[in-house]
Structures are given as structure tokens and as C-alpha cells.
Image (cartoon, rainbow, N blue to C red; front, side):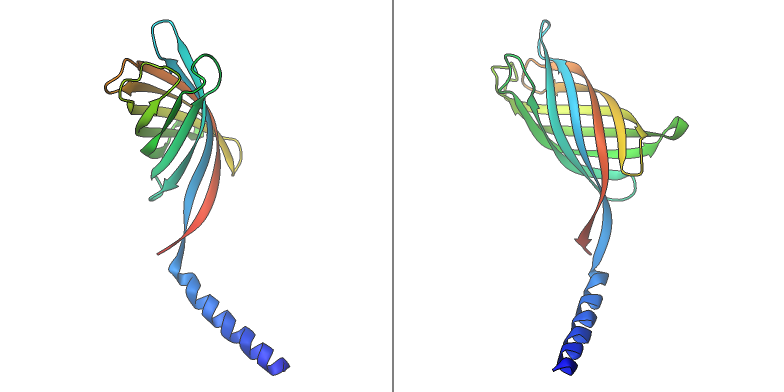
Length: 167
């Protein structure tokens, strides 16, 4: 009986060992963000959200993001979409992040028109540890067929993770 268990264990290890060369590790960043921008000349909106960056190579990434209004009369307002971006090294060991977000937003009786968003941003960040870094960013929120066009400001805490995917 023990011989059969050992034989089964050896066979299993060989099968599992052969499968690992079909996997590769890639960087992924999970972000929690606070951002704000003007939705009219007299009203500012603050949103809380999350995004997930999935790296294509060491610098370029793509991902998804979603945000919701934190408080105020626009509490039903939501945004969601996809983005592409690039990380690079900045001065004084900082991180520079260029990103283009596109998606949809609306609700809370905001003047978003059809809701189609284009939102380019540039951010600068600093590593806190091997796992976490913080970023501040400035961008331009524009609803293509709506009345919202404004500079946006944001701050985020980011967590580096690694994931496996099939080759």
C-alpha cells in the first residue's frame, strides 16, 4: 500500500511540476482613490473609488476603475471604465504615472449629458514600502456630450501585488 502511495505522489509531482512552465508572473496594482472635480461653476463633487492596474510589461498597463460620489446631493453619481497607462521613474526616486481613462458616468442629476468620459491624468508618487506607495494626480475630466469639463485632483494609496497567468 505504501509503495502505491509513494508512486502516486511521484507521478503527481511530475505532472504538477510540468504544468508550472505554462505560468508566468505579472505585476498588478490595486488602488483606493479619492478624487474631486467641478461639475458646474458653483459645485464640486468628491468621489471614492478603486482601480486595478494589470501590467503588460514593466512600464505599460491597462485596467478597470469605478467611482461613486461620497456625499452631498449627487450621492447617486457613479463612474466606471477602462484605462491604459505608463509608469516611469521620476526625480528623487518618485514614480510618474501617465494614464488615459475612458468610460461612462452619471446619476445624481448631474449634467453629464450622454455620460461618455475622457479623463487623462498625470500623477507623481512615492514608495512607502515594497508593497505600498502613495500618489497624487492632476487630470482633466471631460464629458464628451455633457456640461462637465474640469481639472481633477486625486490622491491614492496603492498596493503592489503579483498574479499568475497562463502563457
